[in-house]
Image (spheres, rainbow over the protein chains, first blue to last red):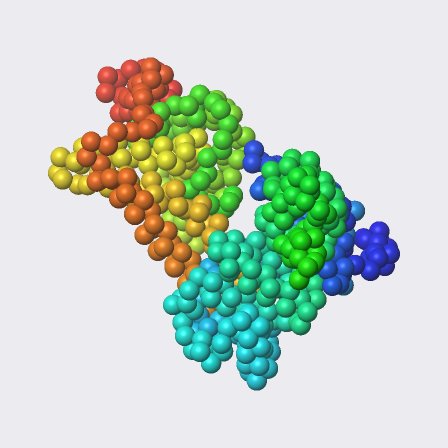
Length: 305
Length: 285
């Protein structure tokens, strides 16, 4: 215990500080699998932090630790030296203040539209704030703000049933339900899965907007490298329950071998840029996003205009 | 996942696991009849010994098997207490009476009967547990469908039952996962499932149950579409992907179980007045 106290004071400034975290599913049974193996990560305030890796690499287990939906395993000795500190709350404690934690950390699950339940959109979005014990007036204000932030029209939609909305709208309502809690950290688990390209783009723009206005720190798990290149300023690569490295996107996508070995694809813009560069078109091969590539092409060929 | 009642199988490779599910079911039924007929501690001991052999053969840790008893421990203890208290013995002179108060008493016969009933309950639970621990749910459903086949004669839709059972068993882990997911999603929104009185807790489940029902209905609609698009028509002429096959060992073990039942019946009724039966009747209750 004393040891733990010492570490707590010495842990340095990151908003989310994870060190030597290990997690085993079904310990001591034939199904035993180690999902996390001495994972260490620091996420700073203001990061748009990407987490990538193959299915089964431990991404989901890792992010559910941040929200204490998966508790740090204290049985056995594996986590004796572990630190999990989120927004100043020590999650290796026996009874961390979960209510305060969930106020600070919002989590959008994969296919969040499956969590909708209430009769009206307004009630559904208000579920989170109400659970936090926030008064009616402020809840109402937060609901309006959240619905506006996700790009929906409050007067049009607030009294409708969430189940009669379109898929994309449902997802926005579900995200509004999390934003209405005004978290400091927003965790997104494959937020664009199953949306059409247009919907994906809109949603990503939305997250960038949210980062600027209400929630400065965002952690996003994704399989889509275009998204990661587009949004994130840091990317952690997970493989076999270990952190294989934390990179800036430009650095990450220059490591082709690593990306390939994870069974992932490079962002389209990167592929295209390097293909063009190889064939003598004057663009930098390390362009990451569509916009950058477009800018390069315009400056190379559009000079006359 | 470990809390799911049905997916109990303990996946190791052993002769017991490999045995045909129908054989296991038939053996289980014979076994239950045998245990119920057994009337002396000596007979119980024989059955227990054979059961122990099966447990050892299955390579399942015996403690894991015994943990099935946790569920019925209250029932067993209550049964024991009432049997002991309410059993007055046969009023024989050599009855050892330990305590008497009002309509209750504690006497030798009562204690013996109580102990015997506990043995019977333990054997009745552990035996069938061995079936669920060594058989996949799908095999079990197939076996039940096979055993109900005679009901087809009186126009019971046995195949439909079997299909329903297989689908239900298949969906239990899925629904369980789904529940977990929705619960987590609502917990992340600050919902609390373990606080407050009963009504509050039931109320707290609404945000879980509604999404769960919606997705279950959607799943079943999808599944029926998928079955229909593959021309499922309710079992007429349907062949099996995994054909259950009785092997020599299965037949031998079923015969052995039948033999055990016969042996115990002989021990109980002693139709031919054989002398050695007295030995097997030691500790008759």
